[in-house]
Image (tube, rainbow, N blue to C red; front, side, top):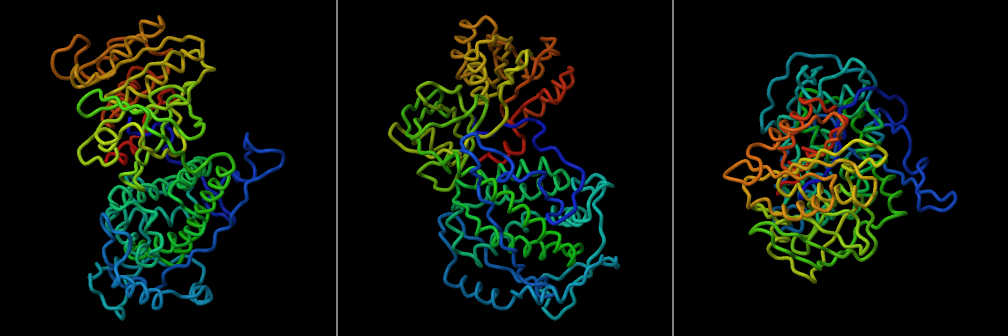
Length: 524
């Protein structure tokens, strides 16, 4: 299943505030200082790696001048061209100011509201006055609506994000152009084609902005990012460069809300974000590699576009049934895609995935149509929390659509391996009988375990199972008040499935499913 899995609450918005040296990104606890590792001996601790303050790429009118950088390199590019370097030197020399000058120019205190700023001309000259910053609040329907309890920094960041959200594609394009021109040494860390990467970056920033006043959730989110970024080769010294270019992009496009106070808030926030991610990576370094090499030992085509891939990691790979990992192939370096494990942990250490090739899917198409036994891929660390709570007596209601049946199968095996049998009801959905590629495996499991029921559901065409949409089929059975629900499949199925389950009385905190945002981002 080419999608990560998380609980439905993993992306919840937060509210609340924090003041102090770390601002509103202050973690409730430092991962590297207060959380112990089961693999550590005695008082061994991960080092807390300091982050250098980011250097803004200029201040005032000079940074509001709309100088367009060259386009970000496209597929196959390894770095800027010779002409790009001249642009880099000019910008670094002309736009960068030292910290002392920045401090002298800024005086504390809120910016006074002014009249509505006129639209900026695309080719405004450096000597023309920049539009006056405005005290603009996001509307009540905005994802960045400001709660009454919001901290001062949170207010400033939410205003900025509300303004740049409608032009997020321009902001991210400008950010990466700045990054690759001013720091060409970072280009090899990124994939050749940047389309998916650009979307992920801005969505991560949006998520951080929505979580500004919930330090516990925010720290968990950023810690996972920090651990995950190890596989890209990210180092602590890379973070200041990214921060500079982020500030530069926001300065360019947050025309009405950008002030010295807003910039200072973003600098504080990004510095804190960086430290959380760096500390999480340092902690993870003590107990796990950045990635695992895994040899393909099995490649079983199930349909013309679905294959079951089995791999042998080069060292033990710890994971739980229902989790997922990220995969990189030798044919598309630095391009990682998420796939759920299709089985519970096995005694022989082998791992399996169900992969469906989709149009223009680089990684999925390579795994289905090109990979063969003997090929070596790379695996990132396991992640996700769509796992079985073995301390509960509740049954499991599982909805799997398409290759989403893979982690559902793993959950069934996990219940069987644990030995304390609980009722498990599986609804396996597909467009037609042919697409029920793993139905024989699931039916054999049902024959072996009397506590397991498997019901195929087909939305189009004749079938020997149930006809219709998966959520509608679930409504025909029940009651489900003594069950925890698990959903895995396409984003549309997840949305309709959650609505149906809540409608029949299953509390949302007992519904675990693939993260809809990550599902959309993982589409190739």
